[in-house]
Image 1 (cartoon, rainbow, N blue to C red):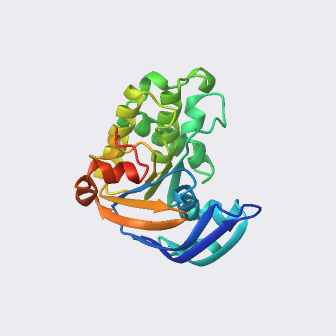
Image 2 (image 1 turned 90 degrees about the vertical axis):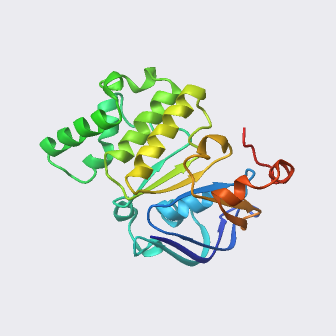
Length: 242
């Protein structure tokens, strides 16, 4: 499903941020938690998977990156987005109303209006969005914006969900709702990659924990192996489990 082989990347104008000879294989249906202190490279991995590197962020790139059989470096980002949906730390506010936001990705595929309407209603029903329909984006809370951003990816029926620190601006209630959404798409067999600082809410969602430091993968563990680590070791890794 996702394959990174001996990948190195350095951002233009930045000496210390990037990746160094990273290899990672993620099979279909697995939920992978990328963790580590700020600047460790976890966000860079998400950008390689969704095509933002090299199509948006420029720099020196080497190695092989394959997503759903596509060579990311040679595939247009619009084609990659047919398979990969991204939810960012600060949700996009492309439109003024929530309905337009939810179908944004579908509109890029030039679907007919009737199909758009059917997908909107299906997404609204399955994610319980009735209270957020036809609302002004700029009047929503951080959690509500994140839910709409998640819905815009869900509506496209992407096979891969990539989330970059999705809980960073959320309160406890919104984090619980985010957890429910992640469990829903995991139950559907979707592949999920989450770069996060907060780890506790993912302990019932993740299958695998990849710990990064200095642009390298230092530990690649099953969730069970991660949970068996002594608290002192987890703290020494700079991670927050609570």
